[in-house]
Image (cartoon, rainbow, N blue to C red; front, side, top):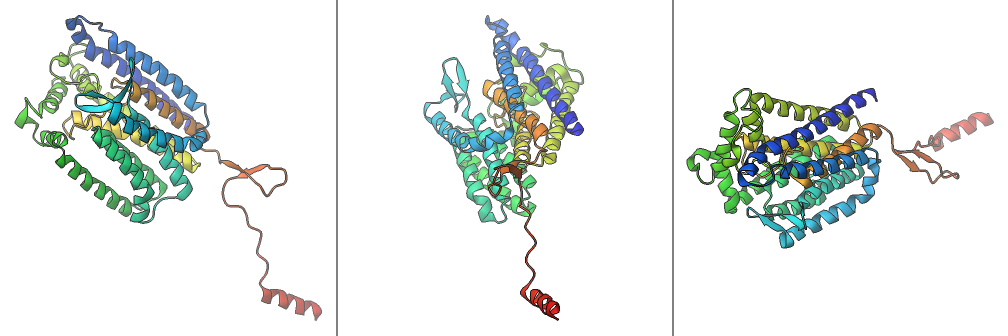
Length: 402
């Protein structure tokens, strides 16, 4: 428990530190352009602060609520996520050609963020109950089928980044559950083949893939965002130009959301870039330590899913900004501007914190064989010693009569 306390403190410090740092960087990325445009330079900072406060409050609530209660909510979370992902395609607000948000007055909600949590909870319940798949057929149904439904809905928005993050999250959960690496590799190979096909037949995604491979061939067109992100990071040098001194808003699209890592590189330099990477490495270390040390199977798989989801999103975002992967529109967890992502991610971290405290306790179930209705430890019951074989009983009877 002492070790779990250390890991809990690391998770809390890194999470709160990245959240506060993200608010500062959002303000730095948006204030200068707001001043030039005659609008409120504090607009995005105020909204991000509200999201952060709400997220931290929910994180505290989740950290004090037994994570096992999520078992009963699994069907509702999964169903609600599917319904909302369908609804966003019909009534969603289109931004930059993508329907990813449902607007409720001044509030915009992104259903894919709930889908991440819903799928993680459902997969953890399923793996804890059924165990890891042993054949490709078991892997495909129902796990592959459920993920496939979400992937199709996400690609229709389109939101390739979230679809990839869900696959990586599920792969980590399956690996920790005991799925054979060969079977998992075969499944991922099929997923990659389908993803490449889906990318190639869609002009929007094909253009992004080609821009990633050759960003400098079309700097003013498809490769513009990738090229400007690389220039932004490279121009920061070792220590950067200082907060607010990077004129990125004039040429770096989505500087406060998907491309905020470019702002960090330009204003804080290599030092800031390495600090962010180190923070996510610390988060991964502490989070996976919590997951692997949990004795409750549901808690183990759920913590693995949440931590791997955060880390997968961070890797995808950093790789895209640095030109190591195609742009997928995935935000940098805790740092990028966005209400749905920040609030639900902070809430999910609260669940991991609760698993760190309660995951080491064995679940107890009601023992119906007891007349007093008391509970017992989960697991197989001790069987009474079997009766001696018939031949052995006959020998004992003959020996007694003699």
